[in-house]
Length: 244
Length: 244
DNA sequence: CTGATATTTATTGTATACAGTAATTCCATT
DNA sequence: AATGGAATTACTGTATACAATAAATATCAG
Image (tube, rainbow over all chains, first blue to last red; front, top):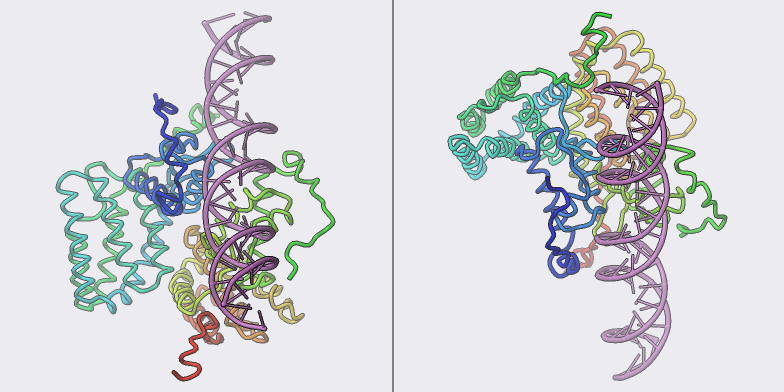
């Protein structure tokens, strides 16, 4: 099936790089397209990402694709194996633990700053995001819901005013989506439906200690909902199986 | 003056890529060479990094150089301006504040885990690092001392066992070196000579609350030692200078 | 001699060609 | 028939050539 089909060639648009887009925007759009596909689990962990195939799909050369893959690799969304190419990262159980521990530390630690800067406008924006998330969940669009949930956490972190920490949270949330994709139960989404609304309430009231504790429980709940069974199909370890 | 000199050409080694190194290692070595040069302030903030020049120096083509520059850019050690090329990042005052706030949150939050995993071997290793740092400081090698200090903080974070957070700390420490390069006083290094030794003592004793508080003061002291005068040479604002 | 415009130069952005390596397939031999 | 080996194939790694754009310099009018 399907890698290098596309008999109708439309290599033309590559010519008018200057005309159509500034080129940078195009790259960014492609980056986001791939990143979103990974986070929304349309590209599943372990899926190979061949450079030629991606280059064909997006109508740019492998050069640009490689740049994007390298970036995704540094963000640990794809794994770049030396001469084997790129594939969607399959997080290990250890990595999952690290990610959620990191989220505990950073996201909870950010709550005081967030509470301090939370105004009416910010609260309204967050509530709207929470509403969309609930709706996606209700209509069975789990992938979309996961993404919206991640967006919520990231937006929250951005409200702290610390761009550096917000970026860290962004990366942690992307990876969390991957972790959910691998270890989460199909039916059961990480975040409970009304958790985010409750959190907004505490933050708006300036009750940052309460918000902190709630965020902590919230993240613990997500982590606890995972079933951490390591895929051990690699290297069956015949010695142990047959009693060496 | 003087970027593209180097009349004596030794382009030979580029041929034997397969023979000499696995290629990946070579790239990593070059990455580290550039990164170190930035952190040690041999490449000063604002310095332009021309692709051709770097390619000549390291004997690889621009392709590899671009990959390395992109990585450094994602780590915010170099700034990649669309058609102007790469230059060593000059952190703003805001960024500096974000970085030190982030270090407060993460490094202090890591102290309990570090204390728990601190054994004799680990303490000895850290003491050795602290010793080297003190020695570099005494012999006037400020750049080296800055790097060793950053290494110390990173190693400490790694001892927490959380690779993700350790990586964050690594990035924060690199950026801190840049910040010190821009805003630090020439004679006065960030870390006091014996701070790190004291910290090891608290950690070895398992006194994690004390270690946390000490780390917090330590980081505050570094930040306080900076003179946060924004370089405002860009857009001199003649109106204000000459009284409009 | 000053200022604006044109030309040249320097440098990055992108694609493509070629080389090298791992995986697959096919064939021969036991 | 199963295994070992050789040839083919598929894919990534790297360099280089070419295009496009911004900076620098020169030229000319006033």
